[in-house]
Amino acid sequence: MNLTAWLIGDDTESILDDLTAPNGHPPAQIWVPLDATTETGSRLGRYRSAWAERTTDGEQWVDFAVPADTILEAVGAQALAHPKSVTYGSALLSDVQTRDGVLMAKVPRFFSTVATEWTLEQVGQDPLLTKLGKETTSTTVGELNLKGSFRKATGEPGLVIDHRGPQLFQRDQHRYYNVSGYTSTSRILTGIRQLPPETPIRCAWCAD
Image (cartoon, rainbow, N blue to C red; front, side, top):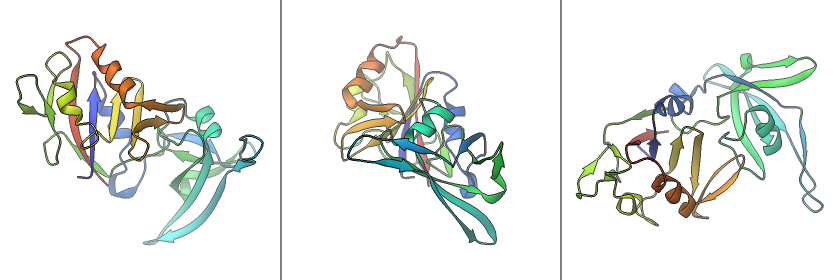
């Protein structure tokens, strides 16, 4: 298991389900246009969508890159995509259609997926720690040793999910992101501290 995720609050497991592509097949849930161009500023020029077909193990796929503004408009602010560039994805050719004259691909609920499977059983490193020093996979915000669990610079969760959706950790910049922008680790921690103490928090392990 190569990714540790924190699930904060109720009903967040369904979000992780939508970030999972069983057997490498991403769930097809939302239509996103592939014929898109995004203005990015004077020197950067314009980001353009691009796509190409391929055949793998007898299946026909379309690989594509879509600008952030297009993803933001089609999927929403919690899409798991880079906020200032293009994000890559893949869809079965059967999930790519021309609709109302626009070439579109049907993508996962949050545009990207992060795993092929996940579990709440401790099969990886860096579980949660309680204020009593106990390692656990599930506790509440009030019982959580947040600083000890976060393990700054050594074992931050690679993915944080709450009722708003997911944010992915960008280790080289030490921050989290989705298509709406970047969030510092300190803001993530502050947000958790401000939650009601009875809020559940669980640790999940994801495999690609």
